[in-house]
Image (cartoon, rainbow, N blue to C red; front, side, top):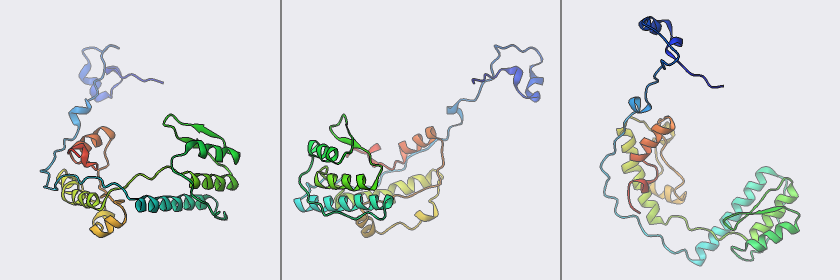
Length: 224
């Protein structure tokens, strides 16, 4: 149902001011969003230096990430099926969607080809979930490199030296759990999985304006 507001339907205090006449064409004018929108401003960017280049991962890096991804996949499966027994799986090759699809289909798991060349599938039983784990462990996607230690160090400095001061300068406060940030060593060990949280509860248009000047993603305001 669509509702339209006219001057005839406003509260009595407003109607008294309109005794000279009222018609369906007299539309009640809602205030423009821009008229009441908060304004935000940036602060000077500290000298953090250029964004460090991405180091090419070594074979050892790739293998370490493959094993870590496999561990994560199994822990997710256990969350749904705590009694599942982990099978022994031999890695075969990266980026082999045809082999992955064939393996899944052999286990009676339906697959759907994706526009990017990947494979989508779903499981609804423990047996199917374990079979899918085996297939995806044999034929996983090649791990993408995470941030280097140098990049994590840069991001840590950005969070503490720009993001936090910028949002505080615009009137927002850190939430209690963010008031004591991790040390640089802890931040690197957790692969950058920390960001400060603020009491900036804003509507989407206002949040967009805040993100434009005090972004979580530094590449909104700098060139990588």
